Image (cartoon, rainbow, N blue to C red):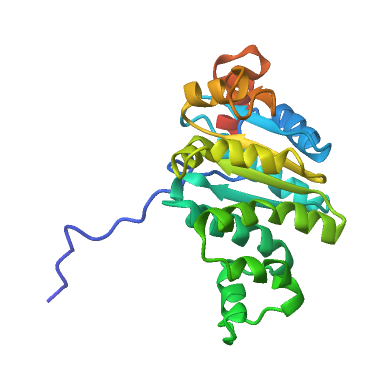
Length: 250
């Protein structure tokens, strides 16, 4: 007897022509090349930038691509999602991991630094000299001193390597909720650093605009705002001709 057809056989999913739900690859950054060049140039020159724009407009994707280009040019980079940190130590560990990965090429390198600092064998093979600058930090038990030590790691890496370090803080407004006067502490550390450039991203525009443009606030005039939603004078900053070219390619 012939096999009965399966009425509910699995159907292959269509190809992801239009990626959604997270950062997209460079090929799907429609009409952003001019903005990307300006962003990379400013960070490479050591300027701090504020990437402004509403939700779902591609801020994270753009900054990740900018960091990729900067790495290709020989810079060190670090990306920190502040929204994923639930306390001061969590934020510090995220920053430490991102900074140390430039030396080791290994994610969650700070876990290995903590093992070495405690006299244990690390679970991943890393060279001592690659985690040396974080060993004292790994022994710190006070949360406030720990996060302040982590804030100094980009400067330590820049001084040690002789290369510029570019750090991107995504959802930066969330960092201010982790501890009293957290923004003041961060500004005090950042403004004294040399060879380090910062990019600040966030989806709560009102908070960020006040933080960076209102007198008396911690980051007043600290970063150059680059408005992503108005780049080129088009809606969402994208020329309609760029959309047409992108759609034809799909």
